[in-house]
Image (cartoon, rainbow, N blue to C red; front, top):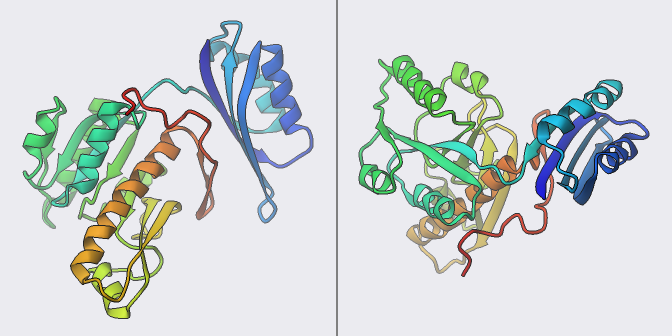
Length: 294
């Protein structure tokens, strides 16, 4: 049996869930997981349902049959195969902890992604990447060649068929044009628990302030630096006895975990943009199971 998911967004009104559930039952589908949210402030409704097609209906057949209901309820609806892996381009500079973590999670199936290319403005990780049979592209970026460099980046994205760009500690600011073109399809990891300690060396700022928690934030990239809708955050406790170097080491562990969880939520269709915020539904049972357990 095929395992599919449906995600919908529309204005909140009576009968939405009943219409979806009734449709899936009529099509021979069994709902295995469901989440919904009504935003009382905006009047928007969001839902995601995982289901099994027990009578062999294909995605195309389901999409076609659902079109009338979607039109009637004025909803944005998207069906997708939960077994399919999303194609991802990872971008990195000189800090490789997030890149290495994503390469490993992808290799064992812990993240349902296929890394189709790695782009860097340095050569540090070329060997690591090509040894895993993944194309590596070194694209230097300067003030003078920024437009040309971004055009080359977009060529890689389009030629590889990538659906998502992941900035795994890529230390270059993307242009407004690229952010707009890839809106909702670029995820960044920020080495701070936003909105605190913005700017350069946030771990040093945290150390100087004597904080007891440090963290990381993963968010969608927008033209406003580090102001994009937040997908995932986490923290780790620190004490007065630890050094700024300890903060960096602990912080890097959190960054890798937070970025991986944000990517998982995005590719599983659990994230909905909601103005400047996001709606993030919890993972379905079994969605973190990997191909190589233990």
